Image 1 (tube, one colour):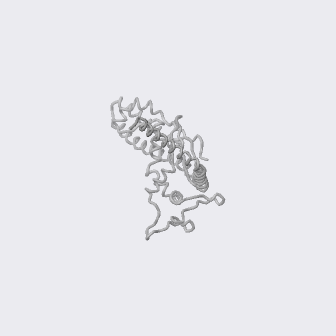
Image 2 (spheres, rainbow, N blue to C red):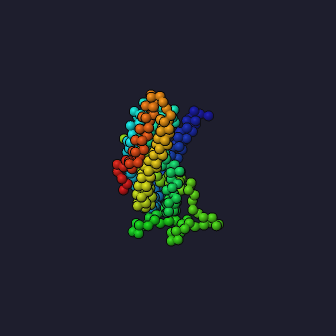
Image 3 (cartoon, rainbow, N blue to C red):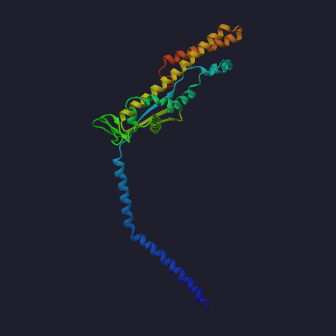
Length: 270
């Protein structure tokens, strides 16, 4: 066997690889029009699908945490006595706003909203909006818009439960805190009018809810402190109790008169 034979085999191997690679490139070049056509077809289909999807509108509210109290100073001077008395001093506006956001997302808060007429069907059965007639279009397989009734399947109503509706609501309700400290509340819906109405509702209702909570807490604290002042003889302790009493009276008064108690609207919904 000569030395030339293995070298010739190696050369033939390289030639075969070169020919195979050239064949692949040639095949790809011949198929370029097919590839371009398929790509264009899928792009056109994507555009058609996007154009035929129903529009989803957003209504946004820009809000700032309201400042209602001098709790920071009071918490330092009276915090010990308040803790012993079982009284919670008001948090600052940032903590109150964060608490209000979590309450808005809660099922307990949303339940009253979901039980209002028309809310569940507009949340769970809506599939489009007729702009000319300003009417929500419902899924006919779920909801009879003429009779305003949910359909049944095997004798069981297709109306979603409050828990299911709440989960869907959280997919349409967004509350985000900006770097500036402001909050943006966003509601999405097929109907821009409903999105606007619901955004207004949540802002007004959370302010009302937080007012009610603080008024009830302040009244309970005032009654308790009044009883303690009647029985306490130590002047130093009485002075602290008086300070707490005055703070709770101010807290109750502010909650009663300030309708933008937790969130002050900077930019109303549109």
